[in-house]
Image (cartoon, one colour):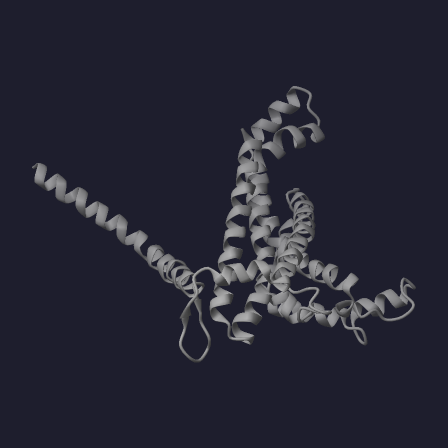
Length: 296
């Protein structure tokens, strides 16, 4: 009898493992193996042609002495610090609006979310047309209302290229964060609000003392996802600015891409990728730690 129970338990465990196995295979194939390979490559001088040479941590030392790489890291952080609050504020307002009960609210939710399903490449191309100096819609409208006297080359000026890209990314990704925040808003039990109303709490007090504390974990997750996406920014800058003007909008991922596949320095590119991965891990840990402390 005990042997039969043992077999049943073993069978159940094997069945559970079969459900987990596909995810495990995906993680090993697309994360663990590339990570180990990149770490291995980062210790070598790895050209496109010819023999690779073991050089230890020289690629990492070189990265911290590379002014272009350090500049790309600083620009990436600047971009993340600008676009993350922009994206969150727009998404937060949108979530509040579509959380209301009125006729046709589902249509607005769909409209707000639609840009998310458009690829970043297509979104960048659309906004390049909007920003075009000669026939772009933005210049046409601003000239018509008298805001500007002559067309602006939005993507070729240091002062306008970064805000222009941030506006596109906010339009593209705000719907995703909106959906997360909307789910958090709707997860709050209505009975809590009813009890607060009976105690005399107004809508504003309920929002700051009930809603915000309860949805804080979702806010933290939304911010972490936004920061990670910002640090890994690539397509929008490659398509819209090509890293210009004068490499001022070159992100870390873009510089790694150019180094690895433009100059075929695969070992050095792998080392910079490892550094970027560590930065991402530290930022994510810090963000989650802050959100955990604020909820306790």
